[in-house]
Image (cartoon, rainbow, N blue to C red; front, side):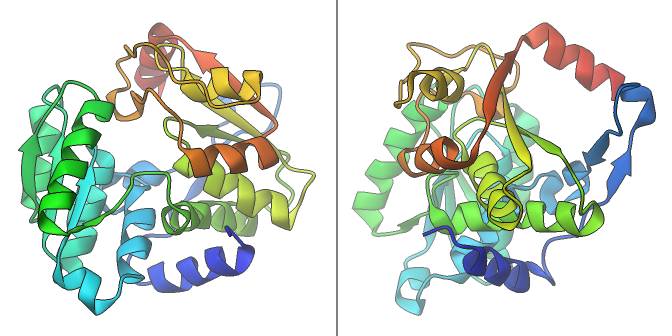
Length: 264
């Protein structure tokens, strides 16, 4: 269960690993409300992913750790797992789609991981990672469909609520659902009044379509410049928490994503 106790425990484990990133007001981005940005781009490895990866690895037994860990990712989760594993002396192998930008491949190798390139999208790389797991007995660190990973990502909500106790709405990007399920479960259990809005690329809308249908619906194909969230199928566990705690899921075009990156 993704309980508040688990998320608070994750925050304790992460206190000397993950940075407490700033929540900064951005008045020029909206004239109709007080808008704040959570600067997870300044996190260790450049992404929130290190939170879930480190917490998951920290919960492995010595026997599991000794066999090493394997992960599948287009970049940010890869770097989070590589950094976390190296930090605690665990061997890591990362399977990445062949389309992954070379900068992300190099960064992942720089954190100490062995990188295997396979497939063109996440789901194909995931299949290869599962094969390697069966061959080696390594522990698979799922990028989103794992309650320890979700708990680690949920620590972001704890920080938001400490800095902004009366927050009304939290907008969360969504790919496979690890971040939004963790943030939503944490925020809603503390204050059910808070609205959680998911935002997904319209070229990879699996969570949005599933949320509207009330059941998991894989996408036939994915195509978006947001390569880190190019996921065909939402997680089974994450979708349960999304259904329970998320209020709405919207989609945005690649043009809107590009404009937002430029504006920020």
